[in-house]
Length: 465
Image (cartoon, one colour):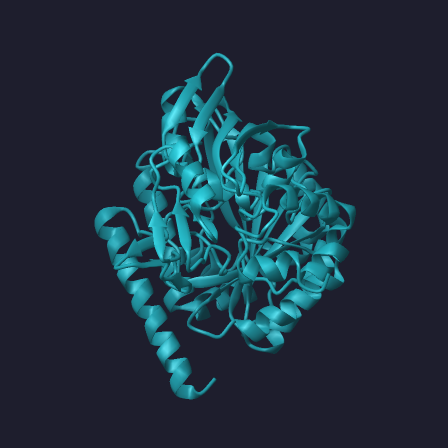
């Protein structure tokens, strides 16, 4: 890439971040979702776009089934918080935006039935009013339930790890328009999680919630080596843990550790303002001043500079909003789940590669038990550590992500198909073995003629087989 192209990339990214930062300050929302305007659909970061011949927003499941049956090629979109071209289709793009209703909440059984287009933020708010919540969530609440199912949402947790753990039944539309209700034990139920829509649009889900709770989030800079050595103790003591490593022009001595634990403490006074300030600070550093993040990673966690620029803090919030954030710098993500016993070696190699290239990226590490209900997914079938690169789009990502992916493969990594990946069907067969064969059998029954197929899904599920 030429100097001029790099300059254009940096300016475009800085403008994107400035606009979204100002919008967040003035409205409380950064609009980090996919959107359809002037005949074109774009994902949240404006990195992927398509002009479909038909953009459909059905208001009922029956209408959705009819559109599916009548379409030639079709892909389904929810919140558009995607990092690859999997949603794109030049024929029919089926939006779930109007299929966003809560059908039923039963406080006694803690069961809720929802249409799959509902945004997680809206579901969380409705559950909170009924004294209910979800025990584990991802890093954003702008996604639709359908999108979270399509990528087998994981968070980070000692006891809970996946949305799929809480799902009791699904409604899925096959290529011929037939709508099927399925539950655990049915192959379609397990194939739908992580399928990125190739087994048909998920249009309804029944989810079992838990009693609502307050969540204490603690953030601190910790010594990298000591924390890695004591990882089992750290995970045992905390319900949810996430590490932020910083790569670039630095030798990382410290990492930023986030811990979330349920508490009976009252919410922190002015927690909303403090949460906003924290998000703005993280956003500003990652988007506009990465050298500060690199400095903090390179110095002692108890130094005066570290305590001044990144002080430890604890914030108690409602559980409905405690996991997610609303402000993101424009970036790309690649994420693989590796076997738990491989995570430290894998992170070390990734960090060495990034530092050798003087390439700035946040490297997030999270953990889950073996509880996914998916056939495919980054955490399916084993205790897992997730290693994610979140690199600002002010710099090229393709070559660096290819090198990272080679490291993930070497450590038994399983890809997150909602994010960057170059995997082929041959890779997927090697990675997942018989699980991939089971998945392909379900996919063939649901879509025998490739209605839900596009270039991305063809590569991931077919190429090289």
